[in-house]
Image (cartoon, rainbow, N blue to C red):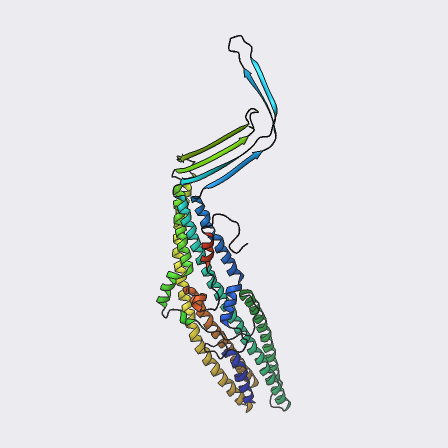
Length: 476
């Protein structure tokens, strides 16, 4: 009977656990892989698609800023019916001559059209600075997108490994119930022949009830993990294949990891571009103190004057230059300059904060990865020792040197050890992805995912020099 338990545990449960190990066996036919799940998340995740749309919206800030270099053209037209009545007064030239009044009244239908073209020649370099600011905001949005990509891929890897872990734990708990049922059957048989007492039977029944409760808890956790998988990755899970660590994409030394992350992490790059945008905002605010120069051309063609019945047609055309020098406008522009400078100081502090946060995350993730590696070795040794102890306790119980409670306790210790091993293997893989994200390298290109990589520069160049049109490049 001891051989039955040995075959049961090693043949049934170990297979479900090895699926999480770094050195994975050949994949089962039709199994979902971690790489495939990452591809699905990269294509389908709504958070990521929303951020891509946000970047495209920010792209439009550049042509909006460039519009300051372009002329503004407006056309006006008017027409309608009107009633005109006017009375003119004529005084006599010779003193004493009576004053005469002449009244004209009637109806006419005046109409006309005109156009005005205005070109700004100088506005205190505000257009140039607004363009540079808009470009910095585009770069910042791209880095935010890259950071979102990292977070989505990390969430997808975590959701995949969580479901894989919870599936293995559920299998462990179900098989544990089967073992406990066999243990209860044997205990009752021994009770019937007088080898054990009623207390031993009660202990076996209690352990079985506890095992069934653990199965229910594991099923609830597994169901929640399936829902999270569907939310993050966008498709329902199938049969999951082993997940492997991605240590090979991370630096081998902690100082190198910190140096790379502090220089290239998208959160740091985002903060840097925000500083650039804030610097341009200061210059834009200072531009309000400069004079502005513009050139305006206009023409107007009218028929049937709206003010006189005697005028049939009039035409007016002009080209005028205009210079405006601000002297004092209530002090709002000075407040805007001071406000922009304070915001610039804040963004510089945010940059330092981002670097510190990235460094702290890298060090923390590095420690978690190292602990995960060591924990696997410890839990593997724990499982091996628990297996040996359980087999020994069963042999001793068979000859009357151990009680049923000793066997049940040893059984539970083994189950706990195997759950700890599954959890450690899960933590090992997730920690490797967490470290890669902390460094700023968790991307489809680095992972080598077989998926078309979204390129935000394509939309940017499609709209940057657009002068007119309301349709987006995809036709909406």
